Image (cartoon, rainbow, N blue to C red; front, side, top):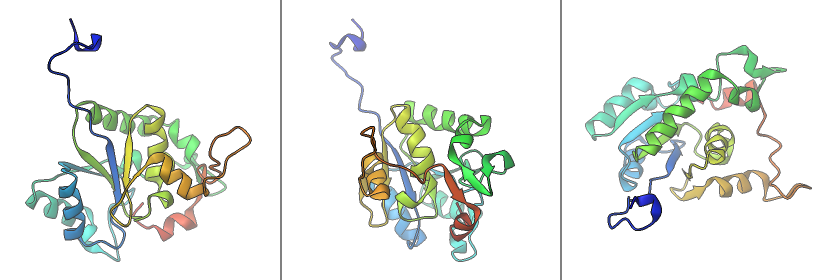
Length: 202
């Protein structure tokens, strides 16, 4: 009798959620401490531009070296899952439209890689720069997509607290309900280049 029939004497361990984090005001050492606390083995960088003028220690090469010293592998997926896509068709009136991004082959390929890693039970975190998950595309875009696929997402917020995707969207919207009973999420589709420039590494 198979495990799917419910009588497997050795049931599989629960699959880990997909974690996300923004380094925000953290130091590299503080970031690594949080990753270790959650037994993270892989860091997946989802910044379109993985460099920082203000915190150069979080630039791609420097971050990769620091993680390697701690036994954490670095993977770059910002070209597929970044908040500032290179494809001009993702923008309307100079603002990124997340619904357009979701339909792009590069984005879908990135999501497929995340989904495959999750299905393998890997413990990994998606990294961006913004400390508050409700202000970052890792919740408004990636988190929405993963939740729609039935993949649990836990955001590590700016205070090192775990927040579900639903909690983060409630923080973003103030928990207001639409006429259809769903959480209002009016900002998810349009995100101006000016706002993106404030979050330079997204």
